[in-house]
Length: 89
Image (tube, rainbow, N blue to C red; front, side, top):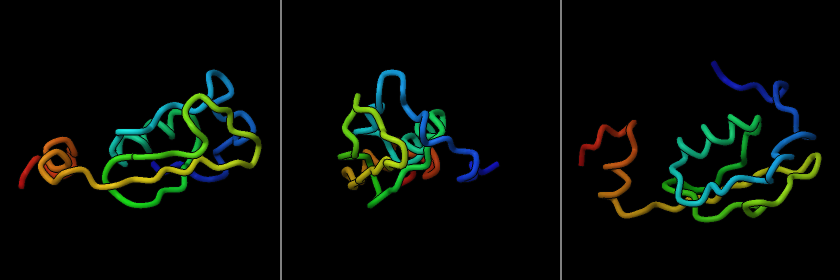
């Protein structure tokens, strides 16, 4: 089941404790965590999250988007830790 944009409530995103720290997470992990908070982030790149806007702990203002920038880690680490790839090289 996909999360539809109409199901998101941007005015109440991360109001308790601010934005989580997504750095170091795979795309799959980051999207899962964002979904728990009712947000669909803008994503650039692939691999692991290396930066995010807003920064961890900051609050998202109404209408502001969460942006994640990913970069590939070394091939062995990415393949071993991404379940969808089956750990094969």
